[in-house]
Image (cartoon, rainbow, N blue to C red; front, side):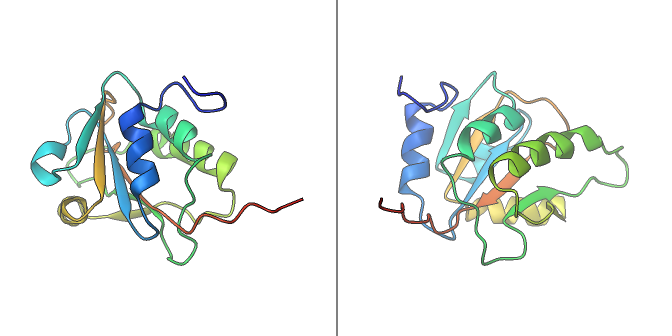
Length: 147
């Protein structure tokens, strides 16, 4: 355990977040997502919900302010019914830690899969909500202000 860091963050996830550079992308995926077949750098966070992980990660992770959409989700397919509570739970964490972040962008399911193939990492969670997958683009971490 580390002081000031959420116990939801495994050593593997902390290492991935640390190794990412600005512009790199990470996918937090629901339990149904084909993460292992899309990205070789896939780790497990079984039993955890994505919204809880976002709340744990975002105090440590700068979202990219140089792009229009640093947070991206899948569009719901026409044959499915959207669950707005999923996006609302993500926005709650985003607004808490990165209040200037633009609204979450939505992209086609297969475009999302293609972006996942070039993502730095995928975190497979235990979240069972449909269309719960979310992609974050890392920004430039601001320098600490010296006293």
